Amino acid sequence: MKRTKFIQAVALSIATMVLLVTPSCSKDELISPVPMPSGVSVDLTAVPYATLSEYRFFDGELKDQYPASGVIPYAPASSLFTDYALKKRFVWMPAGAKATYVADSELLEFPVGTALIKSFYYENMLPDGATRILETRVMIKKSDGWIFAEYVWNEDQSEAYLEMDGSYQQIDWLQNGVQKSTNYRIPSDVECLICHKSNSIPIPIGLKPQNLNVDYNYADGSMNQLQKLIQVGYLENSLPATIISTVDYSDPTQTLDLRIRSYLDINCAHCHRLGSHCDYRPIRLAFSETDDPENMGLCVEPDEFINTALTNIITPSNINRSVMHFRLNSTDENTRMPLLGRTLVHEEGVQLLEDWINSKTDCN
Image 1 (cartoon, helix red, strand yellow):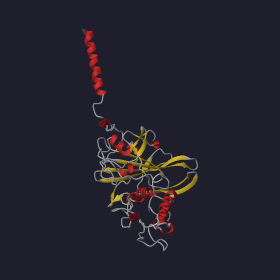
Image 2 (cartoon, one colour; image 1 turned 30 degrees about the vertical axis):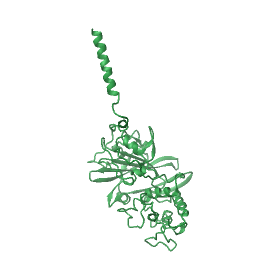
Image 3 (spheres, rainbow, N blue to C red; image 1 turned 180 degrees about the horizontal axis):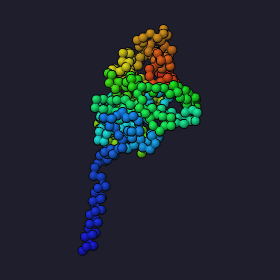
Image 4 (cartoon, helix red, strand yellow; image 1 turned 90 degrees about the vertical axis):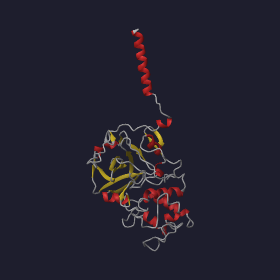
């Protein structure tokens, strides 16, 4: 009798365990788990911290940039040019908080407590060919809006320290086997605001559905980035069936129009749009607006005199009469575009613009 009761008790225990580990939810529910507990620390009453390590965004050595639980890497379809710096980007949100979709071309609406992390680094640094992180920028959404936090890395790459006044670092590296040098600018908080603002309010730039609607090679496999955010519980599952998206401007399989529009969107549109730093200019360079070539400046007279040769912002089939080509090909602080974020000419970007201009035979 005792043996029978013992067997029944064991069977009941096993059945209970099976119930606990067997999912009772549907397949759709399985791809939207609650985020795992995170060791990340973002105390909105104390940020910005004095050091990057205090946030605990990364596991292991800080310089390895291995994301902690809940810290999700991402990359826009096209990347902002910053003197050929490479970037690692991450997003973190408090447990249970979710972003929401607004529009293809608008920033996701992020919850309070969200942290966006972007590290700028170079490979093949001279003289020893090492990889070196120069800066990590953090944007944090507090109840009254976004704040900037700029962290500058020390020489041995063990820590990054809060510095909001701006600074320079002389660097030398090999870019595709060619030696390059620049006095790299780490921005001040005022400079951050010039690019990251809408009607003088600080905002992020790249985290729009149009830019994230591409696959990313995560540690557990490749996946569409918007679907990944839904899967980890960071985004409401309310996306439209179709998202009009930017492309990788370096992808030669895409059309010239899509490539140049994507390039201008990520590099220029944050200033050349309504409510931004250069909204007084007669061009609008957001991807959602450049389906009209006039917004790109095609056959549009410049609003300021530079020289008599430059007759339009874009002159069909003539780079030497195009203001945009002149500005992108300049390193002079008074004439270059973008104003901030580069000291070197982006040779590949200028070539793309040249190809597009030369493909135009009229004003359409």
